[in-house]
Length: 195
Image (cartoon, rainbow, N blue to C red; front, side, top):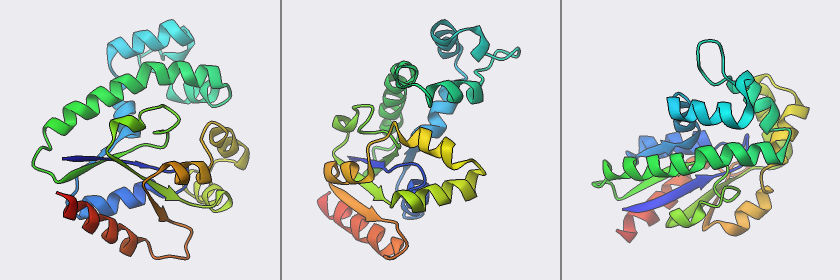
């Protein structure tokens, strides 16, 4: 089984690309979704409380994701602390998930910060979804109803689109000039031919 990392900055269209791979019957592990699930684990909640303080856990005992997001996307040290808690758990969870997908030719691990968190070595190949910054910002504003300033805060902790493209094995362009599906089908064909 080939393990493929699928990355791209906020608003690049990673989720859209991963949905196409899913339609092609390729198993996709969504790191963001799994991180949210792992934040429900009592041991993780305790680590969050010990690292960031009682104020980041609600009265019902859950992590206050909005409050946590506010501080981690404003301070690289805080983001690094959260990454240190969650990323080893996400990678371990991905490895366990892969065991149930052994019949698959390849699997996709979708995550925005593969390079930033230093986990690129866990994948055989990396696909980067490339998108110009201004297009990505507009997409996120329309999708989330957030402000440009909030998006730029998050972007400051991600490598540039160009840096990710340079470090990846393949680049899918999602700037609206090239059709997306033919690019994905071409990659799927290459990956199936390797097996």
